[in-house]
Length: 383
Image 1 (tube, rainbow, N blue to C red):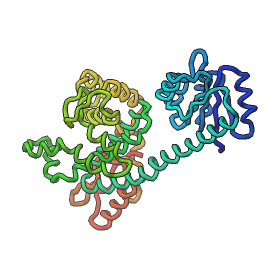
Image 2 (image 1 turned 135 degrees about the horizontal axis):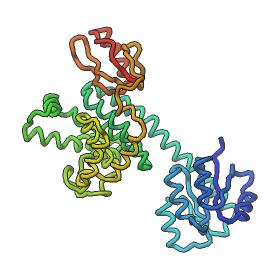
Image 3 (image 1 turned 90 degrees about the vertical axis):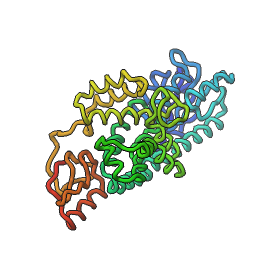
Image 4 (image 1 turned 45 degrees about the vertical axis):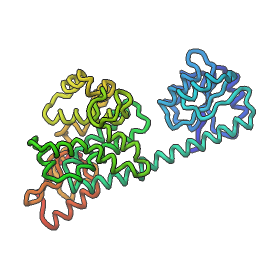
């Protein structure tokens, strides 16, 4: 499919002139004003390039392109106006993340080359996102599955956290929601640097020594440092570093930051992680959310509101015991299914705890354990 271009102006005569000027060069669609353009974006988008006039009634070009950026972040935005004052240009760039700023009258060659450059930029944006969400995400998923062998409890929790955190990020229209997902999955890496006996005591709620407590508190910093030197992981590392930071700026790390200065991904992880922890002991999500909403020392209220909206959609991770549950074996369990109960060897060793999302490496491990030491089968899973 050819990349589509949306032309937006409040004057139908100007739209007709654009169409004649650019006919045969691009797949063009037009919208008369910002409101109509937003409706068209929802119905017929996405567009590779959106070119908008500045001076329009009701919704001017700055307002429209800022809203278009939220609804279709991959689209490249170009502003066309006869008012070339510096203030307008700066505001347009800052609010709408404008790719080019053209002035009227715009010579045909410049207009064509600008749209062509916008299409190429859109293709680069999409290719980069697909690389991150596809190749990199696939490698990370495999890494997490393999690491779950070392600490199945920690990495099962990270899977569950990642699924719900991504829903919250999308409700909040976070542009790079993959960051919060990857941060969720890789945050437990630091756990592997601690003796297993320490984490057993922590999970049981047993008393630990001051030295052990210091090591546990520093786990986000350890995980962050391990990832910080990997290309493209700097933003993920920052989210992990601040994931336990209180909204008012107190707590770990001691780096000065509060409220919106804390990365949004970290604020999301803090809320979702504490919510899931509370739900291990409680059954009423609404009550848990209301208690969290009263505590603005720890939590961003906007994130709590977004979590409430995310939970309004039936969530397979939160609601166990769904009618689609069935008893499976190592031969029949499928990738993407969720363990309703833990999987154990015949000797009683826990291989995977409840709520683990089954991956390909999990299936291979179950197959090998079934053949070599034996499994307690069948086990309950949720399709």
